[in-house]
Image 1 (cartoon, rainbow, N blue to C red):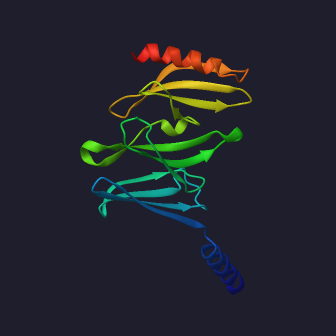
Image 2 (image 1 turned 120 degrees about the vertical axis):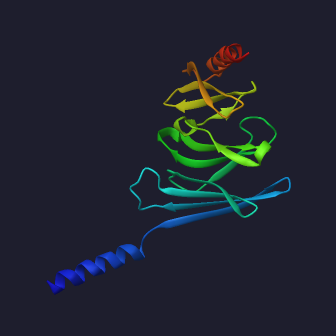
Image 3 (image 1 turned 60 degrees about the vertical axis):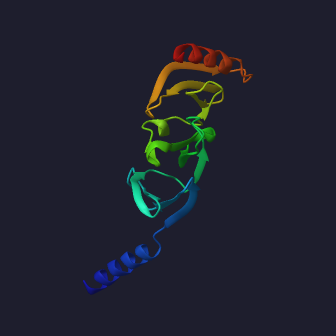
Length: 185
């Protein structure tokens, strides 16, 4: 019994000693405010949400969330084309480089960030030449494009426009974008 107890204690101590936790801490300024993002990834977590996230404005927490992430990476891009960089938190990559992100839109009116529900469900989302329209590019041997509207309140609306570019020449994308433009005007 003593041997079993000792063995269990050794295994528990070894597991705790080699637990993998990664951290990311990033700071940036927008106007007169300083923002700081901390991400903490527990690589041994079996939970759907393995990364805790805290966003601070001038050292005060303004947003706490948990997301799933395969590695800690962030990007800043103006997804809603309002002149301010939005925050993208990397989620993962499926087969064929289908990268997904969680999107947090910068809101100038309250100097805060707003999470966009459903954004992380679509890979390789990027802006288009049509304001308010974004496109996901799903790579499966061919390129499938799915078009969405990102409205002023930060809601992602599926325009139910999907085109497949089997020739990889961009013509299907342009056709889909024309349909999306007609739908949002």
